[in-house]
Image 1 (cartoon, one colour):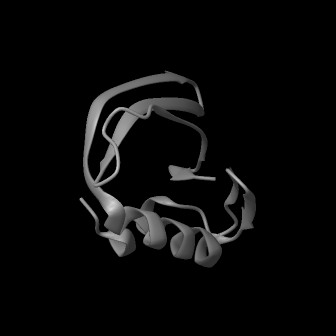
Image 2 (spheres, helix red, strand yellow):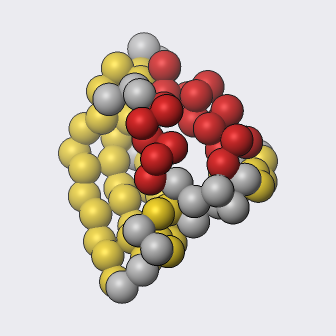
Length: 84
């Protein structure tokens, strides 16, 4: 929905994120990264997810002014109800 502050309520303070071209440590760094990306989204298409215990895979097509056909995938670990 574009509300980065709300999204961060689901993220652990000590999150580690490996993103294309950057490794992020901590919730503040992750929030800045997501805050730079989220405003470019015009929508998200064809969401699929798979979970196995505390691991979740998400597959989708991020829609931006530049593309709606580039596939994306994310892999999360959930600890104590938060993305870690």
